[in-house]
Image (cartoon, rainbow, N blue to C red):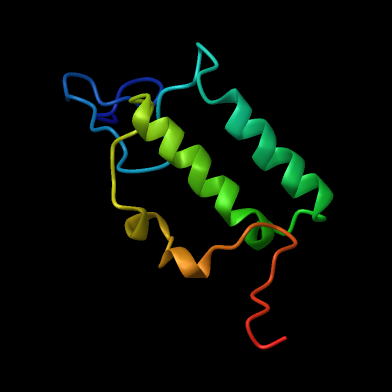
Length: 96
């Protein structure tokens, strides 16, 4: 007999929240503008997420500001220096 219960649950044990990947939904649509900008960029760039990183960062910052996710340093979320993130279609033309 299993100690986990009929459906695999841990009876009597307190659940542990995941570190990343699950966070409150934006029920009040507080970051919809940022989300829609990001999704539009993905669609227009053929789902090349690297071209939309600046919008991904903007969306995550919105979520942190509205307490929809834990505040973290952007480097912990895969974002390096600001110079590494450039808007879609813009290139550094310093040498041209």
